[in-house]
Length: 280
Image (cartoon, rainbow, N blue to C red; front, side):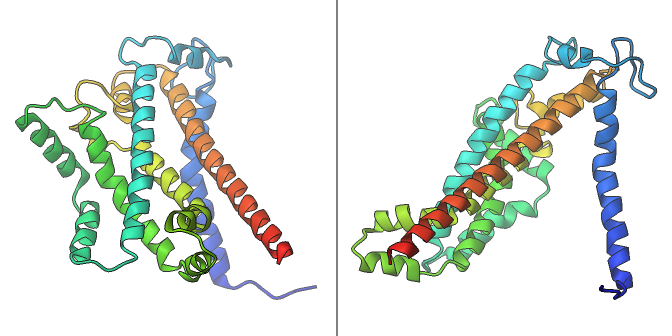
């Protein structure tokens, strides 16, 4: 039996982690419970009955907002941002594997937006669109504003992936007669697929809750974060808690789906490697 005493640092870190979990999930627990208030329930405890009334009411036309339309706009915007972030990050990672003139300038220009205040970028993009005679909209100016936030992270992730990627795999494929496209399709892409899924999830998540860079660029129609902010200043019923529960559960669903896809890809890659080893 191991009777070795744990060091003091273990208990300090455990207490810190417990507080972190409490502050992270404690508020959501209260929102989750209050979202099941009865039809006559209020914004505070105790519960006045238990029902799904406010979830049903959430998907009806609200007098101070339109959650359904805002969610659709945000969802399509996030998908657009996710796809472009994955593709551009992958191409950037492949390009930077070979040195080229101006690489440092391109790199620092890409990550520069991370140190610029988000509201300044939002304001600047909105002003430029107006000066050019284009009306800011969620599918144009807000789309570009979100990419200034997601692309730097995606590019940095792919840089880290390719820095650890051994070129010997590609050399072996070429020695066996594979073309450049076949090498990429059958060797490189399966090996970096989990990282690409992570980049896509990261881009989706960052775009999903982005507020500051959307504030001046979404135009006349709100995305979901802007709609939620507007509802917090006007809604005085538990429908706001129902909205918080639905959006949080949606976030968890996206994360679990991405983890599941990554797990399946890893298992398939391991199975292919095992089959290849048996064939040797």
